[in-house]
Each structure stands twice: as C-alpha cells, then as structure tokens.
Length: 311
Image (cartoon, rainbow, N blue to C red; front, side, top):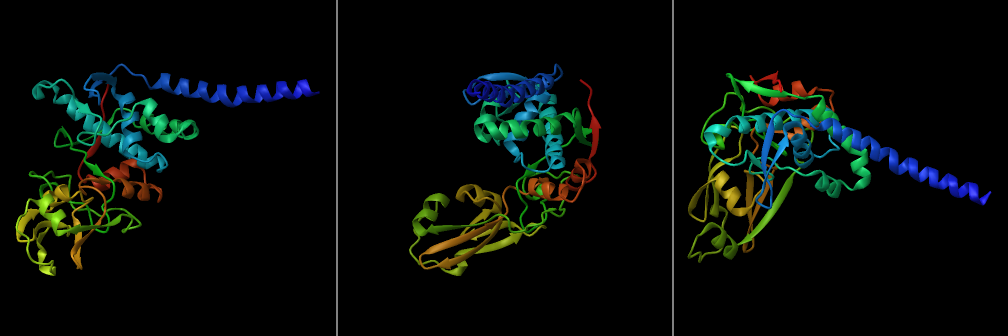
C-alpha cells in the first residue's frame, strides 16, 4: 500500500512539472518567425538579431503588467510593433548597428530568462500563454497615418489630466497625438510628493547664492500646456521648461504643484510619464469596459489606421 502511494505521488509530480513545461516549450516554438529581424543592443554592448514577433514578447512583458486585460496587452503589442518596425525601416538612413536597445530610451525589453526572474516560475507558467496570445492575435498589425508608420508613443498614466499634444512635449506636431481623455477610472492613481532643501535644489538646478528662506513665489508656474501641465516654470528666479525640470529633479510627470514647508519646497507630481500617446492604465481601464484593442488605439491615436504588414 505504501509503495502504491509513492508511485502515485511520483506520477502527480510528473504531471505537475512535465506538462506545463511541454506547453511552454510548444508556445515558444510557435513564437519563432523568419520575417523581420530586429537588431537589439543588449546591456553588455553586443547586438543580437531577434525575430520581430519574438522580440515583442519581451517588450510587452517589460512595458506593461501582464495582469492587465488582454485587450490592453494587445493594444500594447500593436503600439510596440509599430515602433519597432518604424525603427527597422529607418535602418538604411540611420547608419547605425542596431535598431533598438533594451531600455526606455527606445523600448524596454526582457529576455525569457529575465521574464522568469521578474514574474517567478508560477506566474511565468500562469501568464506566458496570455502574453503569447496578445502578440499572436495582433501578428503583423501596425499603426499608420499619412502613409507612414506613426510614432506610437505611450506612457504609464496620464493622471488627472488629458494626454498631451506632441509639440508641447517635444518639438514637432503629429496629427494623431492630440489632447484626448486618459480613459483612466482612477485619476489620482499616481500621486507622489518630493521634498527639496535649498542645498538640494541648488545642486540639481545649478543655482547659486540662495540666501533667503523659501517663499511661495520661489515656485511659480509661468505657462501651461493645453492639457494643463507645466510648460514653463520659474524656480528660485530661474526659468525652466516643464520637461527640463522633470528631468533635473527626477519627477514622474509635469503635472505639478508646490508648497513651502519650513525650509523645504514640497513638489507634488500627478501621473507617471510624458503623457503623450497611449496611457497604459487608461488602456487597461478601457479594456475593463469591454473595449477592443482597435478601439483603444483609435482613441489614443485619432486618425491613425491599423494595417497588417506581410512577412
């Protein structure tokens, strides 16, 4: 009787371990394609060529929580594919050895081993099929406008304000990057305050000779974008672009408020990211209301169309 129990336990372990491994292996083998090869600059400085659809698995895993709704993940896959294909199309004129890197400077990307480490084995077995489904069901789909691949920018959360026009964050306008509602149900999902002393601000902003105590006038918003975020601001007598101040102080957004508390300036930021293009949290909230990926993308990139590219 004892021997039978040992065999039963051994058989159960085989079922638990071998079958999921086999399914994952089957999924990986079906990912491999022989179409566009994206050249990825790895963190060690080497360049690896990865099939487009396989590359996208690593991008979606890195850029969006896999717990998000499937339609949000599909919208992310289409946006990420559009970005990658546009970089690939620039290859001849760009004269560089790679198309993308693995950071947010282009698109974040994780290898399969890094995905396992990030999620853990149980979640890897639980969610990898969902990730695969998001990429497979959008295979070859990209966004275009005016006969070109769009700049499919995206960010984490628009916060309490609409998305931004591209020309108010960067230099040039895009017809499909306009002020649209964030689509987010929780407008204050990301609210974070930062405390700065005079010494800290002096160093970060390259301002010298701060002899007076902080006053409310030391942080004065001079102009705002059409969505209401900081466009230009005067801090301790020096004028900064909102995007410049965000970078110098390490702030998550340019939707800012400030108050003085004693000898510190407290800056509160709302939202997370540059606010141009698709809000990822907005996409997830819209998907939760049964909106399809195509509808989500149509909202965030008005005027852009989805087409399918052939291998």
